[in-house]
Amino acid sequence: MISPIGKNNGFTLIELLSVILLLVVLITLSVPTMAKTARSFYFRNKVKTITALLEYVRKTSIVEERTYKFIIDSETNSYEIKYEDLTLLYDDKFKAVNNSIMRSQTLPEGFNLKTSESEEETEEILFTSEGGITHIELYIHDQKNHLAKITTTVSGEISAEFLQ
Image (tube, rainbow, N blue to C red):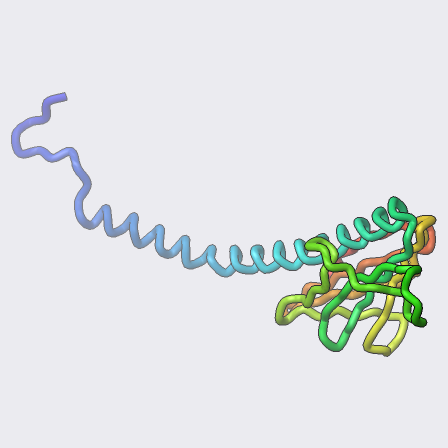
């Protein structure tokens, strides 16, 4: 379409600046909400990862017909997995697992791992070759007041519940 001489079809500088200012305000207001959501997703992902790992250890113990231990160290916020090796001659017949999935891990800074059953620094979840698990309630929380509980039952059920 041909416009009359001297008539512009573009936007004025004030209109452009108004739109940019509006976008900056909207982005500034949405960043804290997005950051909070990202932290929440990160926390939930860590809890689901530990729950999936517990399920994996349970299934591995059944398939391999071997007893496994999931050892929780509340002081260092770490966990490791060991399996029963009947060829070992000394009293502790459990050997550390050194594969990429079940290796020893420490939770990221700001995360805390604690069991409710005792005040001991180290707690163990025992997985039997028949599918049984030691009953335990494992609490995970972070600096942003997210809280989750992972529960294992003697019958072999593992569940995660997000409390905050």
